[in-house]
Length: 621
Image (cartoon, rainbow, N blue to C red; front, side, top):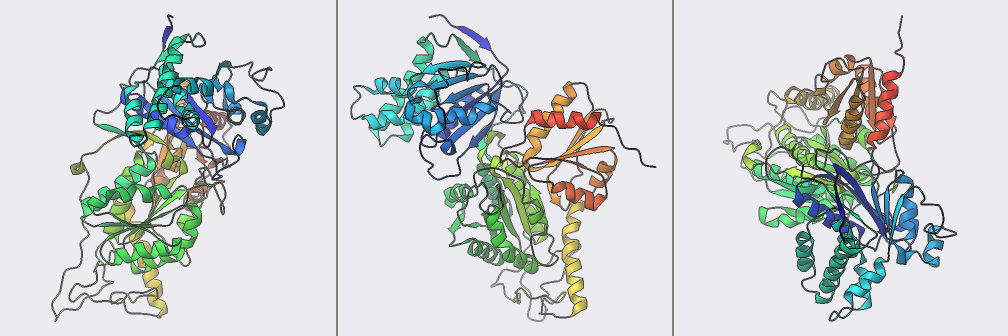
């Protein structure tokens, strides 16, 4: 049959189903095919917290959202235009997010009485007015997948049942004209050793495509042209975890130091351990430690031995690493701590995202113990932020905290691969061997306040380490009160001097006459930019700035804040950066806080910015 082809600038699609339905796989394959076509894209995986919630229940729903377009995009999208719901629970869990007129494609076979009861539906939403505001396509995916596998050698009922996610993927691939060869090659490689599974998945994927091509249910196919407003270069799709691993690895290569990552598995940081373990041929060593404290100790021991010591964790693990981080600060050794933030406190919402570790990163150690903090902004920016964290740690002899979060770690976007030569060299500047007549001073400092790095085994550089306060210069144990005050000041000044070499805070204020400044940090970057773009499209004036270096802050940030009468600070916490800005610069900032475990949405920021612009400015006498 002849079908209409329509061109769209952008689309947001969400796959949703039971945690065993393969929604992450289907979404990932759809993303790969979209990247091949050259669309700009951003994704948002959404995992259930339970390891295995009861099948068919709302707590067990897993979803994957992708926003793809023919122009530059900034977020995974506020709300899906299309929802693929594999069962009633997936429909019920995601229905509140759908705008009126959205398209819903449901696996009609899954809407049995038992599954409806599990989802809390007294009657099927397919049979009443629940979905009256939407365009609904009822597709018997389970039945059609089983028919596609009939007669295939070695393919049983179980193989066919597991492949219905590939049917959904094939149908969506047809609907949005995604290439099929990318997915088919992946299936053939993934299931090369399992002929029955390979046959079932290929048959299901092709059947989904053919259903879209031939059914009268779908009479329109959509095309999204490749994006043209992107910087030339070679791109690959990365999530924040992969980009972080590559940034750490690049820091290892440019410094010439072997990389050792010691970690204890914790959601959502565990994937960084998995990712770096793939690079043993480049000298990477990974250790799965017995606990968080041991992991931090191994990383610090590697730093003492002259290696690049890294440890990774999420919120609760940072609590346990705090003492060792304080020891690293006292020893003044380079070490990178990657905190992939999640919703807390305690176990909290381990698979959901949040920005609630900022104050812990700033102050979560006993004693006066300031250290540098770098916050990544986008999945691709995790590369640059990880590299900078390594550079600061090595060149300034200090532990550095790199803040990412669950959204950044799991979401993906196209990332331009840099040439290694584009990255600055990192000089470890190890202390040199000295003669017998010379005296080595392990806590003597250069003009930046940096002490020598002397790996054990270097003749003449033997020195004592430990957590007790050091004497200035010699590094001997010292209980002298005046010396303790001196060393506390010197350690703080060393961190503060980093600001001298940081780039100034950039402000996006096209005409220089904005009514409001929106300032954020971390993964709110895309949502804030998108919200600001929408406000400007309404003819209103708004400026934007985003802070990568939380400690020390850029040297011009106070000047920037004081240049605007109104400052909005959006965060995925109850107001942490806003506390720092108010305390440090005595400026009045308006917080916008969200702690639902979900990213900020551009639409809600748009309204918050407009509300602040239109609010009367208080005049003080």
